[in-house]
Image 1 (tube, rainbow, N blue to C red):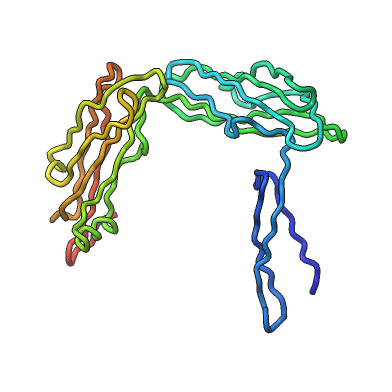
Image 2: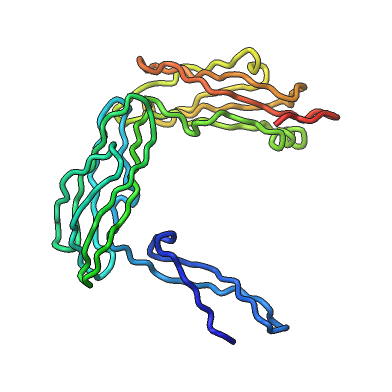
Length: 264
């Protein structure tokens, strides 16, 4: 049997413990192909804590955070320069905690008037104790959040592949939206849920308190199969927040009718 050569791009496979599977083909009639499992460890020149670099806060306010960088290999590190190609990220001072091994870095970003999630790249040029010069790349997320956040953010859809099960089992189908404050300082209550007349007979809603004044879950229930191919309307979540006292999302149900095709 010949020698199998495998190359791994460490930039696309980050993490300490890596497992990759390679399918090997041969001319052996008894065993023409088999899988080869390759395990290894990738050492980062610099590791970050927390792992994801993320600045988060309410839209309209500046964002700020502090992150720890540590040498992830036996090589000592000298930090030469830090930079960002974008204009949104402000890089503070890098404080050396342990020579060549650990640092604290402060990052900040200017306020955004509207909620938005923006990604910036942070580049750190270093010289390692083996004499090599390296440029390291880190992704920083700037999360300017709304006062009240819905998870998931997208509209609620009951597709025909789901509603068909309602005919088969008769069991109601439920989906939910988590309603939380965009920042730990935001306190509010979900005071009610309203459905458009177009969908009020098809769906029912209920409010679950997860954490008083902080987090709520709005449940949408579909109990009966509908006679229309598509049911679509708005659901409005009402809150006690003075700034964002109502949030609307679309709720849709698809119901495959005999002899008809449901539009997608």
